[in-house]
Length: 272
Ligand SMILES: O=CC(=O)O
Image 1 (tube, helix red, strand yellow):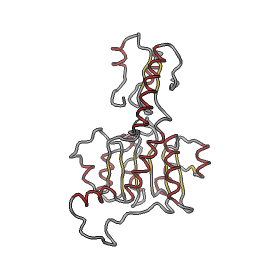
Image 2 (image 1 turned 180 degrees about the horizontal axis):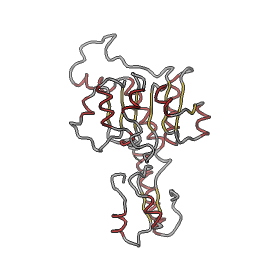
Image 3 (image 1 turned 60 degrees about the horizontal axis):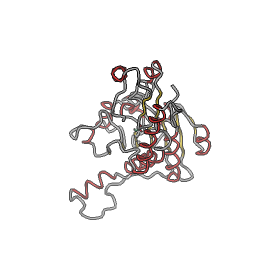
């Protein structure tokens, strides 16, 4: 599971008979791949099967952030819903907006496909980082430099993996140049955002609305300062959490293990 760190200490304890490591996830930042490579241990993971569920949840967070869903729900629950008002809880809509996808891989592209119909004829999709060229063409998406994406996008979806290049890629300097009403959604990994900087940017009113499925740490303490901002929606790492997807992921993870111990090719390997 993503909650278990697989490092040399674990591998030493497992001993020389260990043939295969299988993670029930698409992300593998919790696994020391160099150690696996050195020890000739096979590695399986679960890409593709969770793309739809995660993209769906990313689109959900974008819409929830844009339409102030959390504030609306809280208002109803707290008895603040007195009467309909033309100027209460006004959000923004996606029509004509520019969506910036950071990491147009499997999940990034599937997210962009889901958001595209909301943008209308004058909306735009821009992207940066590891790109699926065919998906970009199908989407009519434009590749831009990261510096440009953060300045131009009305909606930013973080869909890249966590690695040395992306760790804390979103820091105060980045937040400072974003549009003031930007919608920022992260369904990838918490540490891609420098979270203390995010809190500073939010306290200074630099950001419009934020949706996070991932945080640092996980779980987030219920008293965490991030939860005090009414324009921040946090959900507990639910990207792939549908019954269909988790069933398929679990089966694939088990098939990777079984193939590994039987000395057969893994159905879903990561080549090390
Ligand atoms: O975060 C979940 C995953 O990597 O599958």
